[in-house]
Image (tube, rainbow, N blue to C red; front, side, top):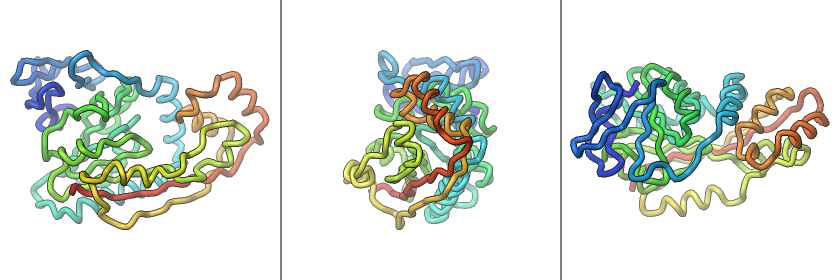
Length: 288
């Protein structure tokens, strides 16, 4: 709930603190700005004229919820949770401090909820630009507060307020991550690897993973974040039926490039089930 994280949220216009008003139906700042809380429990925190970019559609969000709920990415989920725990252990937080976790591009909250289940007393901020995703985020876990915001803009969080940030197949803002991390805090990044889901690329014509993604990540992070631990390469097979394959494609950027009719035609040519390889790399970075 937003009440769990209100002390770390900030007015996106000027960074001033926010408080709950009218039984948390609004968040207000000392500078006079007010932000309505949606009936589903999330809040949109954007400055000026509002959000400039669009997030995942309701169809993409529903596909993500379907695919992840079947457990196909369980090794990824376990790896991210383990890395967050390792980062918190390395930070040596006082036992009296409840860790504050942020997931950027949190989607439906599947990863964040799992991490909170595994780390007692931690609280989570789920941030996504899609209001459709935020509706799921707001109810994914009792210790999650859901925020709609753009990662490319100033994040609506206080300086030095977050102990660990997770980014799963989502955009990053190294300068802002550096600003909001507490001393010793880390960013855990899961990036799709070359060859991820390759078995589906040719028959369905879906997008491939760009070369050099990791190198660009470190180039963009220079001066803000540095490597905190050795990277880990993850790879595992998944046996997917047609429904799972359709959900996987539907939750990905390929959903924006393939028409529904074209995808349906190509899906009909697939076998009833396929073994598909998931590949990714996990990096831990800390503020410079």
